[in-house]
Length: 569
Image 1 (tube, helix red, strand yellow):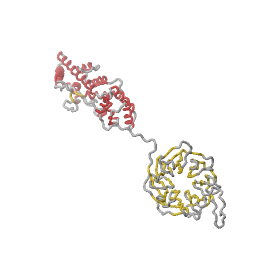
Image 2 (cartoon, helix red, strand yellow):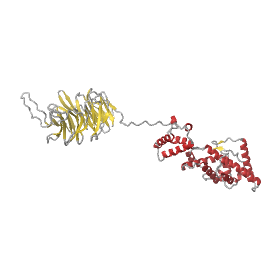
Image 3 (cartoon, helix red, strand yellow):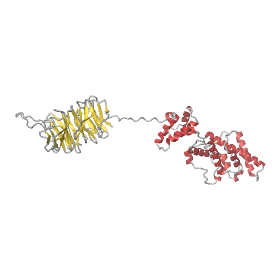
Image 4 (cartoon, helix red, strand yellow):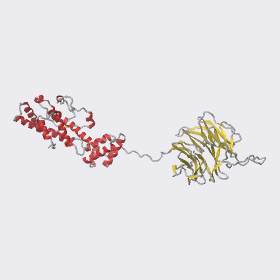
């Protein structure tokens, strides 16, 4: 038995009596079947999809369309067998893209041509008795229509024709009901369209739903959840949202091995360090600019540079005791502390000229800091703090060194210095002052005016083995090796601050705009701490006696075991 569709009996009677035909009849049939097959909770989009698929199904019923659209003069022609067909249901996208044969364009006579092949329509497996019965009913109706009135034979033909049409229409509705895409079919198709799959294995997806006992109601609710998840989104976010919602709604992924692999979790910490250079034992100094890293080493001896992301090594000098390497726009400077006295070396950054020394007669530079056209240095013989010009002009004294004893006179040539004690160990400078560390007799951080118009000022005294001096715009920073502390003091003077403690063995020191970095040789670590104070962070560990650290805007550079590493921050 065919399912009962409300209102269909009256509609069949109107069609059989000739009161309703053509496009109007077709629309009424579609409306009845669509109303019967549409769930009450269906969305507007789902309702439209059902209507479009009913239109496709009914339009493929050959016998029904001949009854609805055949012209009156063709009534005498022998009708085609009323073969019920199984409709081929296509996706909505194809329906929208195809031409609508019921759009009203053209007349009804040109709509149906029984000679046009419909290869994609497959007939239902009807029995011979059913086919003969329907042929006889249609033939009787044709004969009745040829008469001048509606007498008893004609009425019998109308009744038989109505029954035949009822079987076609109602049977077609039942067939469409059985072959229409149900909720689970639609879910499988949406997985292919919206989800991320290697291939669209609809049969396998459907079997997975059945194996997990997913019924039509569940499929319907999953489709609603998926629609909500992807609403308003564009790819690739739309696909990601669909895949996530599919698994959450079903509790499993019906795609199985065809499912997209979960993305690897992104690392939460900084990426591992990369090697910039290696095979550089005895690194004594490191300097970073925007494109290169410069360093000095003892094995091999000399002054070198490479791109700060790694690459070929360039050599500039071969002095085994070089330190304080500093590039400027056009030149590269460094200090060489040889057994016969120190020298200031200069070379073109790109090696266009052979290295030369700056004449400093009577002085032996121990440490230096370069400031454009001038440089400040510590005299290794007297401990004097000096200023000199890179063009070779005679240096001037900022702080006199310790007295030099004349072996013959046994009297000092100069009085004791009023500022830092003899032999300062570290030197830095800014636009107005030179800053030095003096270890004896009391370890002190000094500020010395560059113009020499004012005496030196002690910024911090009583320090325990201070070393590795560095600056920012407002403060002076140093390592207090004896106390295991990282300290700073305002350039203008004030109370020294402890930024970190418990760092016995601290060595190299560097900074960026927000933090201070240092190495701890015996611990094999690199640490940082905010300049304004806060928790100490371990930047790197497991290193081999790291002595130096440097930073630029994107990375931290440190040495370990003869290699220089770059670590993004």
